[in-house]
Amino acid sequence: MPMLSETYMGKYYEGDQVFSAWTRSIPGQDNDSYVILGESGYGKSVAAQSIMLQKAYQGHRILDLNIHNTSSSEHIFPIFRKAFEQLSSRTDVYITPISTTLFNPLRYADGTTESSADLSYTLSNIITKYIKLSRTETAAFSDSLEYVISNLDDNPDIFPAILKTLDEFDTKASRSASAHLAPLLRHNVFRNQPIKRHSGIEIINLSKFPPLFQKVIADLLLFDEFRTASQGGQPPRYIHIDEMQNLSIDKDCYLGKILTEGRKYALNVILASQSIREFNASERTMLCQANHKLFFHPALLEVKYYAELLSSPQHRAEISDLLRNLDVGQCVFQGPIYIGEDTKPTRAPICVNVSHLEDIASAPLSKSNS
Image (cartoon, rainbow, N blue to C red):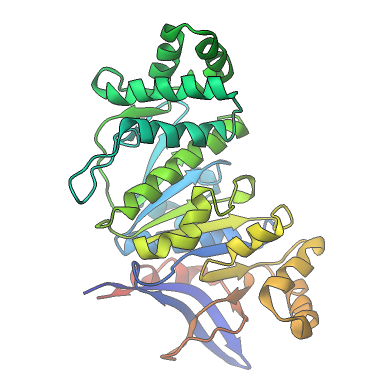
């Protein structure tokens, strides 16, 4: 029987009454993605850490793409720190390559195998989205990647092997491609070897890389998660990204695909950002694909953007006042949320207080029902 995942959000106040507020979902059937927005210091990181811990306690795997070092121990809220350390594994990719099967062609359910050429074409397109190459340089890069994929036993350290192959091709296009790609490919980011997956929080630290390289590596990891999930038969997984405003979330990138299609593959996200102004209108619409949205106190210039997402024009003045007056630890929650013992969720925006840390850190963290 599928597992019902109940996630404690905090307290809801109605007059002098206080109720616990929960989300409920069946991963693989329901959209269980979270988008958390708000100014620094108002509680969004605490909310994200609480959600991650609860999912980990329920036996789910969380991939934490730690782009801005926000998941380092000193940035975990003190009351959560011990549990985080017990439930987390950490890889500093600047020092230790990621064990991956990303560069292995897929074996499809009908017994056929993905061609090395198709996989190299897809991977090279992801990388050249950020590091621009000419048509001939791109072809040389794709050819070198295909060669490495076809000889993985001899080339377990993927990026250095691609760079070496480009140099060995020794054509004008390969030399030019090598010159453009060398700053990235000199980093030994991926090692082809079997992966031991466990429940808990897998923290992949990318914070030491230049921003451009962070985007490339993050997109490759998101592609790997999406293509693996789309084959079916995978347990529920969550991807956490803090300060995700620097990543692309259009419909053609893999974070966008996960937001729009991840539900049917039991693949969900927990995304947090201080700013929503940096996203264009289509990206803001994409963020709304998440079933659960938590809006903490916004910067003054962002109030109107929050209000547009939360309400119809006739109610925006009221919602704007509510947003401006949020205290630390309070958020406006939008999405299906269960209040107290109610058996049906409310979907209207409501104010939830997530500052009851003693509650978040205790029994609710392990609450799940079969």
